[in-house]
Length: 234
Ligand code: APR
Ligand code: ZN
Image (cartoon, rainbow, N blue to C red; front, side, top):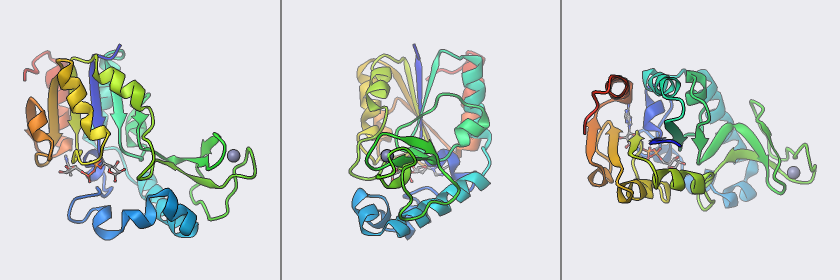
């Protein structure tokens, strides 16, 4: 049973060149999420939504894992049953760094799914409006990404793990999107030690026992080295 739950957000992939959402040059500073990341937007203009995710899929494929992703994969290898990795990110940089079984609560760019049956399949590089589900043929193919107004995936399993962990770490998240932003409260109520690793303290920094400020590519390898040497103290 995982004693450590690690939750990552867009900030862990920032130094791999993938934009975050709410930083000054973030995606939602340049695009309107209500136009691109809701079921209504997909129904209204599927070509526009597919094009947005095609571009993000291509950017994710061109990006490389950075030292933060690699350090978390090293921690998982060193402590295989102790760590549950949860990510809000839809890129596959954790997997390409060597992490296993990451739970993508907001879905994944490299998967497609049907909007009427439960079928999922590896996403092609580019998806187009009108693409159909290969299983039921009637449903429309959409990115397997969780949109605003939809329920995050794996939430029960993640909340259960947070209620039993002894260490909860959030890396590179603004803590502004619920219910994921409330996981720290579940962990704290369970008596876990809680740590935030972020370039700048997030709006939820006050909910954490410790904030390690700095770029993920520096702070995460440092933290993992301390944990592996048994030297990490709050
Ligand atoms: N190192 C560490 N943290 C960083 C770095 C970095 N190099 N660069 C940015 N950050 C931090 C920012 O300070 C910010 O707190 O990463 C966080 C990014 O916040 P958001 O852009 O809001 O991303 P995230 O928290 O993952 O968003 C959650 O919102 O739109 C939805 O589905 C989307 O999964 C996403 C969710
Ligand atoms: Zn289908």
